[in-house]
Image 1: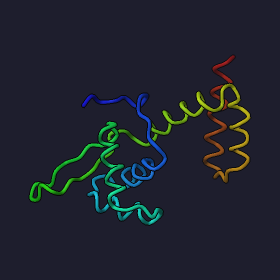
Image 2: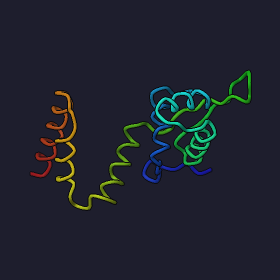
Image 3: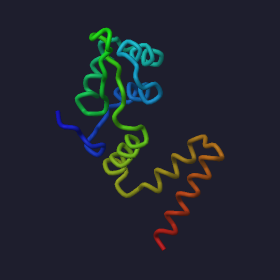
Length: 134
């Protein structure tokens, strides 16, 4: 299986739910992932195992077999959350926004509860962007 780069990786909305669990708690078994995901979704264990297989095939996850029980696998993210978010954001901007990023960003900022820290981070990003364009 050829490894995919983050740029090629496309994760479905359902697969994101599985990835979120493993970003928070890497090294869970399929049953543990299923139990975590089931807290927010009514998916069957089989459905979650299908998502795990898809994510393995896409190169988003890897697994390790249990040394004492070869039927047990522990799943680990290969890609980090920030890289996946960046790739997804770029894909969204390219597909949906098409030149109207400022309008969409303004709308998101107005509709989102932001902490003082997040507001400061946004201000720094905008300042760096302004300085770069001069």
